[in-house]
Amino acid sequence: MNNLTRIAGAAVVAIALGGLVGTVRAAERITIMVGGVNKLIYLPAILTERLGYFKQAGLNVDVVTEPAGVNAEDEMIAGAVQGVVGFYDHTIDLQSKGTEVISLVQLTKTPGEVELVSARDATHIKTPADLKGKVLGVTDLGSSTDFLTQYLMTGAGFSRHDYKMVAVSAGTTFIDAMRSHRIAAGMTTDPTAAELLASGEAKILVDLRTEAGTRAALGGDYPAGCLYMPSAWVEGHRAEAGKLVRAFVKTLHYMHRHTAAQIVELLPSSYYGRRKTLYTTALEAFLPMFSSDGRMPADGPANVLRLLSTIEPSVKSGYVDLSKTYTSEFVDAAAR
Image (tube, rainbow, N blue to C red; front, side, top):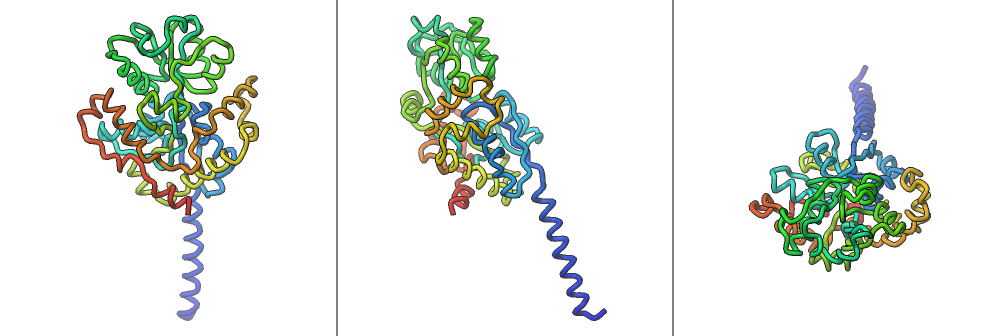
């Protein structure tokens, strides 16, 4: 065999091996955990999967769920999952406790949450200032609904000893807690909120589903739903991170170019059950809360830090580098 033949043979082997490595790398399983996959605020996670955008990007992604974002966060820290679709505020909270995670793409511009008061108590509970001594429902202790509830109560002049918070998750467990009088008020998202409002069992106390409502209650923008991942994982998997962001940005574009009814048709029936019309109406009303491009609002991180510093001792006493809690690099690349 002459040298030219040997070189040609080696080149063929190298190309074959390169293709094999690329195949293996593309097939590497990435698990993304969602803090309540059927919550309206996290719709882009399941929608990206249903639209096939992960596969189109050459990714092997599993979307799994936990009832609350704080539980999903724990799974990520333990290494059981690679990323979380949850609230951006967790990136700040975790950094203040020594864990570096980073938001790669912003999915919602507002929390998408609503503080509901039971209809039976609505006559004497008109604002958060009327909640002293009451039992308040949150998704879980340490969750973003916990953070937001604490902030609203602090703004009303109360300390943590002036009210009680209990974990009631979302969906049927939240609804049951309100129906059984376990909670006088609570913070939740659609479609849970939509169901209680439609039945007349609850009234709105504070609405964080719109930008105007969010700014009025929280003093500025509060970017919420995002994809965040361990900073070390992102640095070691930059190609995969870029593909994930491109897939999510495509979904955001899709959401702003299609009707709520068209989007709902793509979802599993378990998302809306026998309340498809109610789910569709809620989505139609609050589609504007979803980002159109995945970018972080300019003053969003500073406002989230300000809020958390008000209620979280570890955030208040420590130093948080906001530049390490999110990046626009992959969103910029997706735009190009």
